[in-house]
Image (cartoon, rainbow, N blue to C red; front, side, top):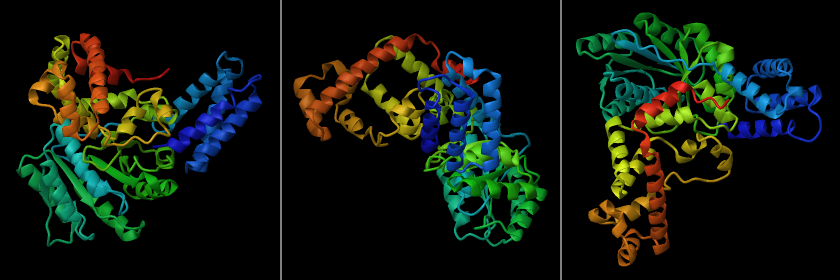
Length: 447
């Protein structure tokens, strides 16, 4: 995500890195290029201009011209202003109320129905909520059936009234059903349209007034750029939503929606969809996103994703096995499965500071672990538990059984041994989950 914008900003800062004295003139030239980069990313013109004017004022105020490292100071100012532009601090969901009622709003095709399922799954697994998914889209063919299938997939209850064409009544009856069945989260999926129209606005306004939700979330396709911002403003003027959810942020998005929405509608981005899987929904962290746009990684988001998939007891068991030098291929396979749950491999790698730029032009196959898994699955249980016995004839048999070469098997065994040594060195961390929690609270700022 934001790869084009990241490249443009990087080129802009090179103006300050060239030979010669740093001056107010080349600072202005740099910011002119930054403004062009933002506008090419489909950022609102007024937002882009205000942004660069603010950066220039702060740059001159902090005396970038006479600084020993003007480029680094300038990048810091841009980083801080990017984070502020997107909201500054992360905005948590309001989970008060019994039940907590969340209302999804937006245009057709933005991904509201899938988002409703992802949100229910996330709050069930992370917050221990007992969700009820409510199909209140009475117009789109198969919308309610799609939501029913998602509910079954993630193991939560589903409510709709197939014969009803009254979304307000469906929503009210669903809340009553949730209270009667001790369900403490109600996620209401509503109808969208291909464009903003009066009938649509009247309907979503009526639903909101009737159910009085703790959260009204505007769901928008981030790939629509500036159009997304205009639509957000139209919705906010009518229903005064609480926050924004950007979907499809893993696609070829230029970033305009993420960078413009907060300044135009003055409502926070709360969540972002980062893929097609049900677990691909993350809290939006302006600071981390600014880091990633500037190629600095996002170690806090990496820790967040790890926290979602790693069980504390399992992590402690693994640490104990490492301390006793008992890490084997079965442990290795478990770690691979956990990493795969965390999301797209290239996306994860880009969160590591310094790695994003290095892999920008490299095509990383998300099935990169397939060969490794095939080799490990071709080992006997005894071999997986005792890697040191895998010598000559065993290696040849494993290569043949996995459809790989002897060289690939040898390479994996060497990499495994190196990994085991590195993990053993890190095994002095007594509580890895506590360490990740501290990292998250620390903010992970690069400055």
